[in-house]
Every structure is written in C-alpha cells, then in structure tokens.
Image (tube, rainbow, N blue to C red; front, side, top):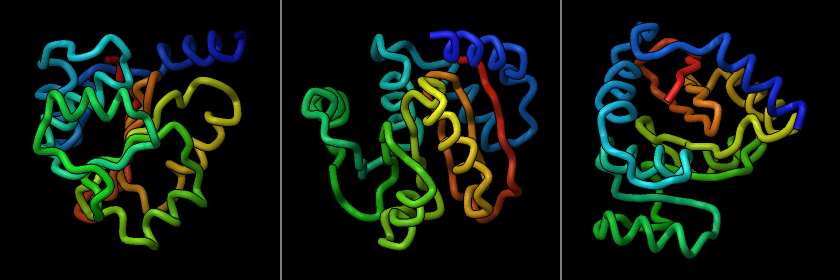
Length: 166
C-alpha cells in the first residue's frame, strides 16, 4: 500500500500535461485522444485502450485472455480482429524485457505498434519491469500514465519518455 501511495506522489511531482510534451506524435496522441474523447470505460487502463483503438484506427489487437474485455472491444469496434500478426495494439498486464524481445522476434510488432501495459505502478516488481523495459534502445517512445504505460517502436523518432497525467 505504501509503495503505491509513494509511487503516486512521485508520479504527480514528475508528471506534466499536454503542454509539457515536445513530441508532435505524443502531443497529438495526448490532445486528440486521451484528453478529448469521452470516457468509454470506468477502468482507466481499459479506457486508454478503447480510446487508443479509436485514435489509431487499430485493426488487430492482441491481449492477455480476458473474455469480458474482448466482448467490450468487439461491441465497440466490430471490425477489430484478435490474435492477427503483427498487432496494432498489444494490451497486457505482464511485460518484461524477455517477453518484449519475444514479441519482436516473432514479428508480433510493427513500426506503429503500441504496447499498453496495465498497472505499471501496482507494485515494485512491475515498476522495475517497466523501468527496465523503457530503458531498452528498441523502445523509442514511452508514456507513463500511472494506471498504465504505453510504449512505441517508432524508428523515425528519437528516444523519449513522458510522464503524463490523464
């Protein structure tokens, strides 16, 4: 409990809003997706997922087995396909460097893929996995939104990390 509280206070101290973002890609994502669209789900991580599917016009989604979430996604986005490769968006609650490397080596990600990791501040282990993951030179954009974190592999962009309040 203390870890999550301390982590949240630290997040608030280090976070910014859209005006602190100097990347056109991230600024557009934050202002035209995360801040503008109405709330689609009460869970903040799932809300970010649903907004991101709409914003990026994602066609292929890969997620950890979750029938109720798959049903929600299918109801809102009937043209979305699950388990096709490569994936436009991967939604998971467990992602470490080894699993990320496996996703890359198996061709499950492309240049514009988004990986959304749920609960990055949930405990010390997940926070350490997140920090190790975003340190990878293969990840060029990472966004810490406290409830979840997004990573992108954009070859055309320099490596940057953002801490954004949503």
